[in-house]
Length: 273
Image (cartoon, rainbow, N blue to C red; front, top):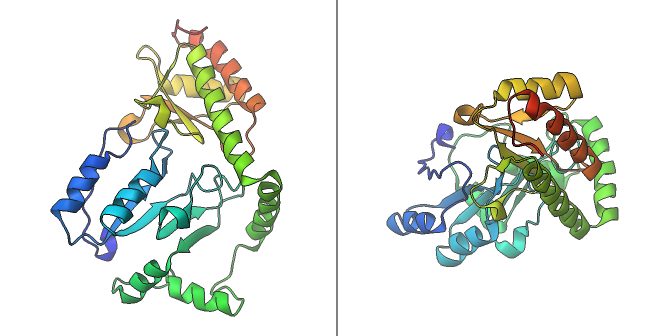
């Protein structure tokens, strides 16, 4: 948003930790000119889930600011009560919990968000929510849509609704715990400082000091057909990540754990069970 002319105050917290509500409260107290708070609900790069409901209670209940949420890796996988929590804007995308290839983005906006949009003066062209709304009202897209991805989404929605969203959330919580327990059974450490904040869509695991992370990931890929993601930026070589959103099963994760049990001793880790 800074590229488009917004004045941004960035709050940074240590990797593996969630938003500190005290810091957020102090920031809002110190600058009454702040109009909106942007927050990531589920952070895939570090495997933590922020307490969005608590953030919303602070931002909306105490300060009555606009709340804009990156829900890309949480919507359709983790509970997110958009209206009940007072989230003004929630953005997500097709390639995560929706179980659909990349190509679609979804956004919800409250009445207050629409009012702010109408007053905003920052430049916009193809990403003009008001234009999309006008076309939606006449049953057309403003540009050529990703039709094949929409057919996939239609099927995915049928699957989600037939299972029931409550069951979907419970399934993600179960497989998240299964993944963390499996990693710990091998002597590995979960990266989030407080495991209660660990994500149920992706598990970040610390790479032991004696292990070459690139070698570990490479052997998992070439010898066991298991593709894991490494850490990003300064976390490169420090963590690896296992995704378990969508229709991932415990059988899938067990294959990963079994492969790790074989590979870890081969790359010098003696703590594996």
